Image 1 (cartoon, rainbow, N blue to C red):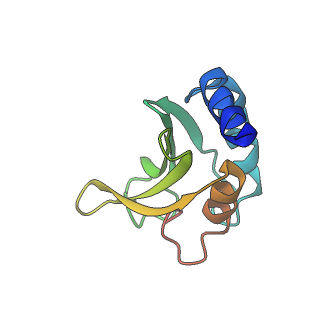
Image 2 (tube, rainbow, N blue to C red):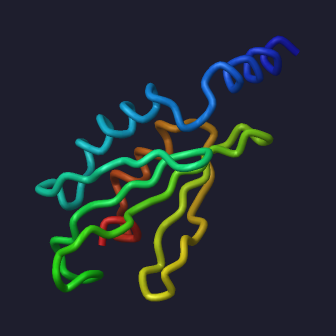
Length: 119
């Protein structure tokens, strides 16, 4: 019971987006495996964060413009982070995976073994 109360208190004290997690995400992105030579940006959105970056591979944008990389949304009811990838052909966000902790989500995003985010 104490854990449930603590979780609810933490959610109310730090709703998303917030400055603390915003900076955590910015710092974590420096450890990514792909496209380390570009500077991604983090934008606060309702209940989360959007990550975008210059497209240096030219796979998504032949001109090298700014493209969406990932969308991180916090589900308050389930206390879960949802990670979305952008389907650039359809111009839609697609659900990728869910995580209990933000750090786990960021590790998956930074590794990106299937090149689903950093295209």
